[in-house]
Image (cartoon, rainbow, N blue to C red; front, side, top):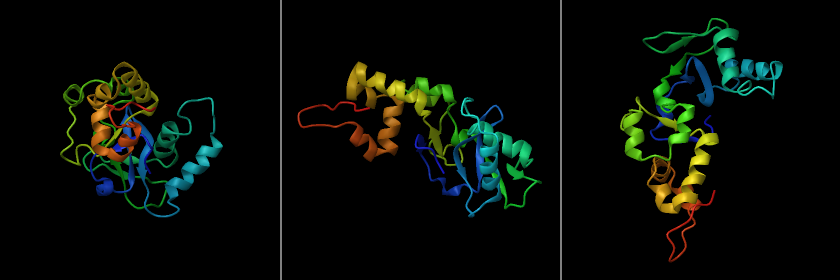
Length: 194
């Protein structure tokens, strides 16, 4: 599973069943893989979702639920060298803690800076797209990056957008979607349609 705002930059099929931490010990539910039907972890998460539901608390049914279930309910421990997760409270195939930089190389607050230049973002965040073991996906943190995209379009239109980090990444890795965002008409340079 991947949220719609996950940008795939390398082939994710190399991933074993597992989840990634977004940082600070929080497992995130924006990308995960459980390849067997009725995986016991998913069953436990669904039960926990219902039991602990609180629509007034951000993340209660998302990252906080994933973290709560993986750490406390099923008691997973991670081998720091191999990243294999051992979960004594369930019978399951091996799960992996995916590398944070592999899935979440940009922290949630980076959504606000995605309008900066490609070179700035790659240098500042030490992004490496040539190795799938380094970076597989980028979470665009749509809640924040959407504001940046709208501002870029208002301030500079198509030209400003396609010269930004988010514009370059989307144009390269989501060319069909990006083409539809910019309804380029004959004789026009294109406009943003958010």
